[in-house]
Image (cartoon, rainbow, N blue to C red; front, side):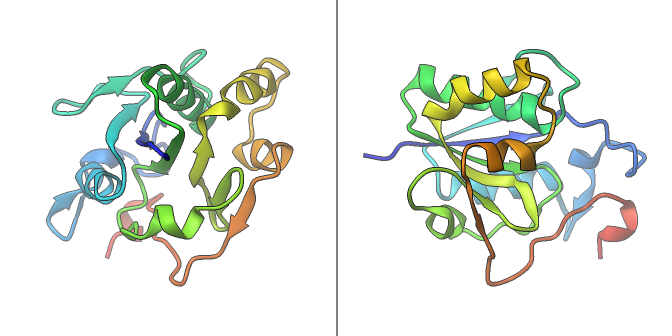
Length: 170
């Protein structure tokens, strides 16, 4: 039986955005709340990786802060394994229009990422030691890690928003 952990990878510094991206509003709702709602609609539990956010279960990036999405994903995969989840459904705080069918679209053998946004993915918890080794070997790219483990790249029916600058919000 698949047990999904939703993980919001939120440890970035939002340099291009200029302020705390998670708190920015899209259609009247904070970005982090929109991503959380979409992930919770299709997972058993949810964690926010890389930051403290009131109202959410939060875990620090692993093995250290400053690794970008890899540190958040590594933390989520380790946490999933410790908590009995089989997979992690990950997304950045900057994808406020995630479909509630995301897990189904990414389901299949092994890991899968959204073609245009590798932070959005479905990862088997058993990939945790592979990611730890990748990071220890100097790996810093989520795309490269995805390729390293043979993750499938999935094109969704609609392109996801990727909020990097305030003008990316309608």
